[in-house]
Image (tube, rainbow, N blue to C red; front, side, top):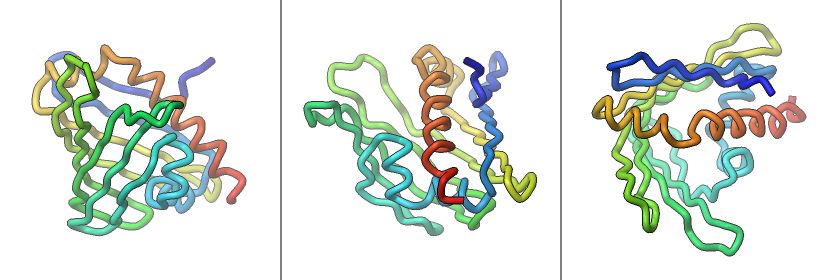
Length: 160
C-alpha cells in the first residue's frame, strides 16, 4: 500500500518535514487537529486537555487494551491561527521500561487550502539534535503517522 504521508529527513539535519495531501477541505483538516473528540478518534488516545489558543496547552494519554497507560504526551501551543497554522511543543513522557529518551521537540503545523475539497498538511519538526531525530526515525514512526493520517481521512471525510 502506498504511504501517502511523506517524510523528508536530510542527513545531518535535526529536523523532519512531513507532508500529506488530504481529500478534505482545510477547515475539516484543521478541525481534526483541534477538536478533542476527533483527535481522540484518529489518534486512538485520550485527550486530557486541549487549549487551542496562544499560550494554551495540551495533554494526551494512550493506554493499552487492558487500560494500562502506555505513554503520556503534552506540550504548549505557541501560535494558533485558525485554518492556517499551529506552532507547538511536543514532549512524550518516557514509556515504562524503555531505554529510549524522548525529549521535547518543536512542531510547526501548516494547513494549506488547495481546492474546495483538498488540503495539504506540512509538519516541520525540529529536534534538539540529529541523534534524537535519528532515534525517532528508527522507530515505526513513518508507518504510525501514515496509519493515523489514514484514520483521520476516514473519520473526518463523512463530516464534509
